[in-house]
Image 1: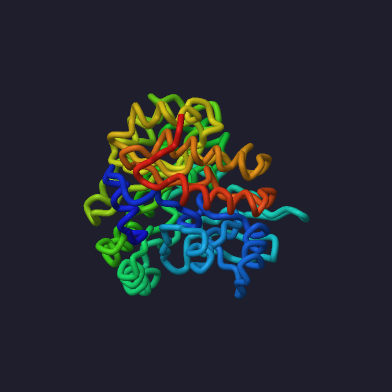
Image 2 (image 1 turned 90 degrees about the horizontal axis):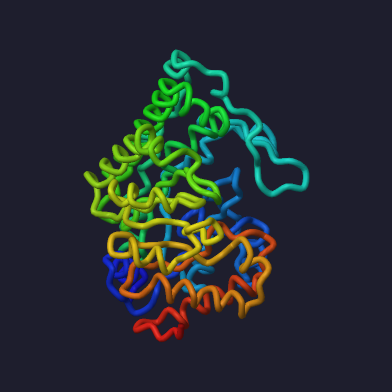
Amino acid sequence: MTPRERVVCVLNHEEADRVPLFIGASGATSMLTPLYEKFKTHFGIGGPTRFLSRPSQQVMIDERIRDRLGADGQPIMPGPPISTLAKDISEDCIVDAFGTTWRRRPGNIYYEIHDHPLRNATIDDLEKYPWPDLAHPSRFTHLRAEAKALQESGQAVLLFVGAGIFSPAYEMRGVEQLLFDLAANEDFATALLAKLEKLFTACLVAALREVGQYVDLVITGDDVANQAGPMMSPAMYRRLIKPHHAKMFAAIRENTQAKIYLHSCGNVYRLIGDFIEMGVQLLNPVQVSAGEMGDTARLKREFGDRLSFLGGIDTQRVLPFGTPEDVRAEVRRRIRDLAPGGGYIAAAVHCIQPDVPLENVLAMCDEVLKAGQYPLRIEQ
């Protein structure tokens, strides 16, 4: 099968020739700059490093490296992506498209939020705020030809526009302040979430009018949980956040046959039913170190007929601290739990960190290609 045929097959809950592998198909399935430089050296790949997200240092992995690792998906993005619609104040300071200031401390890899532009804002301030025009036609002029060429080459194509509602809201407001707003300043929280939903929905619609027929997955992302569980009660999520997610997902469905990919870190177990109800078809990253998300066999039993899973290969302990054989065992476990009957794309739980040995990443990819052959023959 081609990568695209393989991905489409498993997303339709059918068994392909093997379990697909995503590495570099999105920010969460990529790696950070220092590790990527090691991979470039290992494979003898030159050229500049491009970013999916500069503040988080998630890289756009060269297609030659993806091919050698057996990767099955490739992202396309409006130009420039939201993460680079920014003002470079210095090498270690960025102001992003929404006015949030990111700084990198000496010796650090990541940029961290230094200033939340809406921390002290009122509802009236939201109307006067200089919001970016994410749907400007100039951002999409290159997308159609790029997506069409990728599809014709047999690649699975993922549209990545940075679409989220809750995450950009807490980047602009501050996590604690936004959670306080949800509980005690509901009018402001609702106004902010509605504004972000309209901006990103317009961006998605504009992009899908160009490439909807060539895209296999549309990436959305909102981190609404931590390792213990959702950052708000499920009832609060359903009342205040879910309606905005539902509008954005409905707009995607109206403009493409592509599947909806939702990235949400943490223990989102109690919200999975809501995600499915809104039309989410692929859940990432399946953070197995986070509470109920660790029982991947249970996730498959309860939701596997309605939802596909992407990720699940532990990045908190196994990849950085395990041996290559530990990594291979982890890969086999997640394939055994999640892959029967299709509905699973293998990937690391999140963007692979610089402390992960190169040989562990190679072992992960190699074991997916070996153990992921259908029909599965992995012993319990």
